[in-house]
Image (cartoon, rainbow, N blue to C red; front, side, top):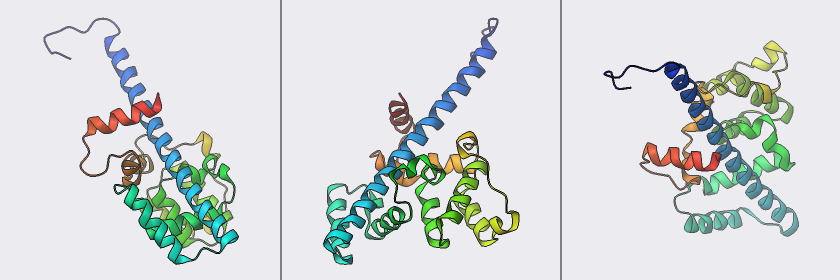
Length: 206
């Protein structure tokens, strides 16, 4: 506010409330983008899995699929051959499309690949996914928790993730906001102006 102006009654409280509303809207928009991206990746992985089961697609076909998708969407490095294999593993681990409504579906893609790489069963993966949501773990913290066998040490079930979505200032929320896969998904890869990113997120929110 201009220092030469005297704030009218209620101005500071209104300003604080509006700032909070803007931050909340941005976080919600970022979550929407992330959920759409994870849902897309699940669908790609599920389609690959289905074609392998029905038509015997091999690794060469997946390589060709990655090449053709990247040719159509060159800005999306997430459509690489290695990532398509992760998508297949993701769909194989969670066969139900409703995965996006579970804790794992609210995590950034990097967290999900960590769960796939480091853990063998879905019960354990789901525990760490819900814990990451509850506590706002970054990918590195998630990895450390897995390496330290936190589930085995605590034995406690995490709270319902829907009631414990990470705070806007948590490391997890910040990683969701800065996820390069989400940037590429929005067509904002490369050097992105903050204003352009905010406009894209707010458009998705509303």
